[in-house]
Image (cartoon, rainbow over all chains, first blue to last red; front, side):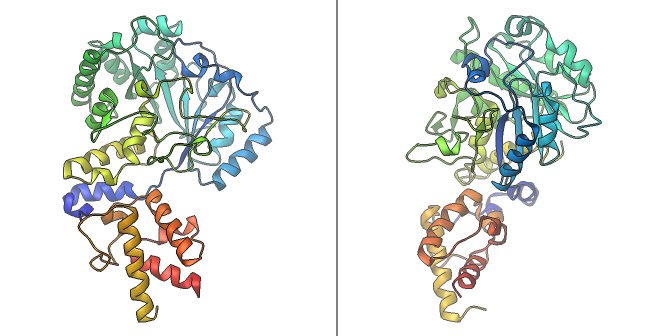
Length: 332
Length: 87
């Protein structure tokens, strides 16, 4: 029988032990249906998820709901929306109870006196030109001023096909404002012309992501195995898709056979009652989904499948470490 | 401490369930080390443990609380846990 120590040298084994018992159990929460931007390609609005449920406005109901979520074993709340920072009282209800990550467009500054160490992920969709096409404004100009030097903030840089050959400039801009960056790929849910990936572009962006990690290891929070998985959609000879995705809401998961999946994962709408199918849009074609967290989780839940060789298990460790850093379970 | 025969029986059966459910290769219930750390060495995760727990719960007519998973780090500890719940 292959064991962990037979596959890893002592240094890698120590890294493995640091993460192996974290037992991260996340769920995702729509904090609100409202946003202060309307981005082309935002899955939330493009699939009308903002219309499926009226948001709960009573903060005490939010607090009771979060307490029940903790009893369910959730130990990481991932807040999305809409724009969560429009309702900081709801964000605070999570933050005061359990480890919380807040996704934001960065236009509103999270007050650090209320949220001293809450991890914040700022969405960024490219350079100034792409941001204006897709989001109506250059959000980096505002978000970088709001969060410059913040040790608990990173950019979630969604790379578009038009960014190939231009990512280094973005990474440098982020480095120069003292922040870190994690990269993922646009899924182009609204079919914006020129923003869908071709096989050649995916190959090129894979190489570029690797190069950025090599050149800016202090700024880029990533690993090459993740780049490979997200650009090819393949892991250990298996193709990502509905039958493989780990991030399907548990009570709605009728797949048979069940794949390895996130335990008790649910994505809740802001009425605190409605559940969404998965971590992203129900209308998205799973075979072309590029969701970064879903691909990371896909690797993470398939640990023993990575016990084929030392390299495979090291790849698994690097992806798990990356996730644990992004959600503050281990330091940068 | 478990009675010797019961110890051996439960340990072998827990090992067998682990090997079957997790499709472990190159090991038999008899050769499985009951003291090997299941997370640090075998590489199982909490979902694996939940799968194994379901089978053992049905077989032994006990409830394995999820809060107790962190304590069930070896086959021997699982066997002891089952014995205690059945007592």
